[in-house]
Image (cartoon, rainbow, N blue to C red; front, side):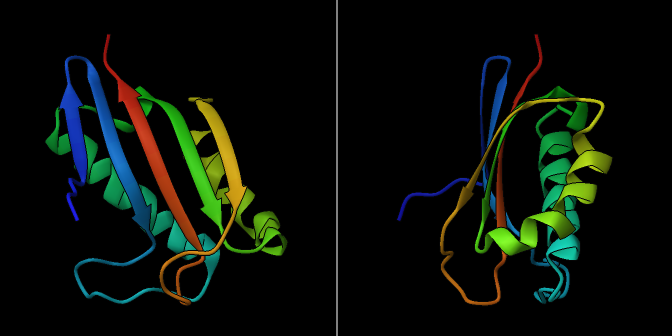
Length: 111
């Protein structure tokens, strides 16, 4: 399959869906909150490498495997993006592996 972690076009950075793995250890925590923190750490590293920052995020899509997990997820989303307030969509759907509880896709713009 063709895949890039992120693609930069002009002032835009499109970050592919990121799951909650800690890529240093290739482990994934059980908690959706911890998985989301790992997602944002990966997204932030990718954005920095591409010349962007978290504050440049203008759109996110969250894919969550079970609506009952959303309540535990919201505080992490607020702590990370509350001041930025990007356009956002949350979808409830299955992911590729059973240990994955969330996937986050982000788009950043540096105008």
